[in-house]
Image 1 (cartoon, rainbow, N blue to C red):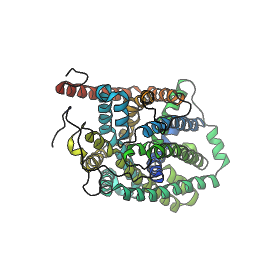
Image 2: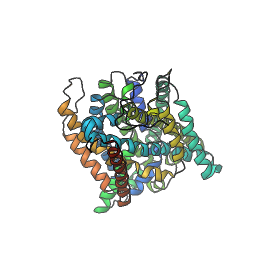
Image 3: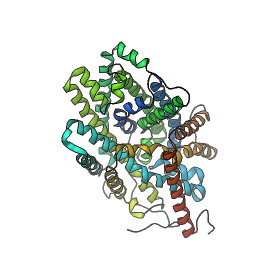
Image 4: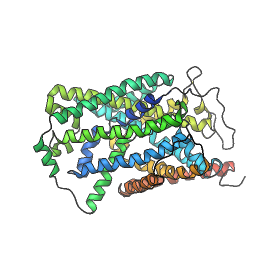
Length: 455
């Protein structure tokens, strides 16, 4: 493989990916990413962390934090509408030839760690629900199903993005319709006695409440995650300064309403203790209402949702190594585009294959580090990136968040709260990952005599 060295000139590729994604394509990419396997496997975890009506407070707090962070993403995506979005945001905000080099490198390092984990978690969740339909599948069989799904999605995405946009729209329509059906079923079969039992569940007080609220909010943010997916595809979006903010800010409340409805529906049908210990809570709810066929249909629809989620997450993350390589910041082969259809080939194959390898880890291990690593590596830095870019970019066409800088302050406070309540082992692992990435950057910078070392 031909390597990249700091100081090489920017890689010039033969063509750029076409801007083929419109508003509905961008919105569907976000919504389908958000409505994946997450809520169907994490609702029991949330009930375990914080019982009673307070659990709904955690879901609402997570939605409000995501909305504030969504304003950050909307402004950044409108200001710098490029594929691999956050890589460019951090490089430009902190100085392309100064600290931005470090932030850009750490983001790429973080992506190489979290992209396979994020995609793999959706695939492993898919395999677990497949095991509900095929109990004889076993642990080894579920791993094989998950890894095969990642490789299959890689093959599906090996084509021009316009085709995938059409597929994304179809799957998004099916997934949203399924979610509405589940919520409608729960509401029409809502049992007041079951709901009253939930409302009377004991809620921890003092430190236990705040730790539980942090845990539920972290779960909620993980489930809402995906509202930024269109930013990863910024260089392929039509009218990006308008389309990206709309896709980000509309997707969050749409999915938040669906998730709250899903929680209320389940807790009005199943006793909360049963829901807290269920491994397929939506299937159990639908089976309680409609019988065996209801549970089976629900599982099939969840499989479609988790497959679609893994598909669009792979699509978004596969653009990040490409964006870095096209700027001369990563191995040159990652900048290669398909000669006919104009999509990144090496980058897509790399992320797809490493995601298949990640499926050999458990779902709990795949999920545990995703949010804290992203918060410490990226999300907090992006909040301050908005401030830095505002000082330099006066383009009147760029989206500007309302009530600035209040959404930024809320975002930073919320992220720090989630990190503080995540547990010492998780925080230490994330800090070690940052330290390792920083050491690698400094070693490379010293070898090539670039910032922060004198030339």
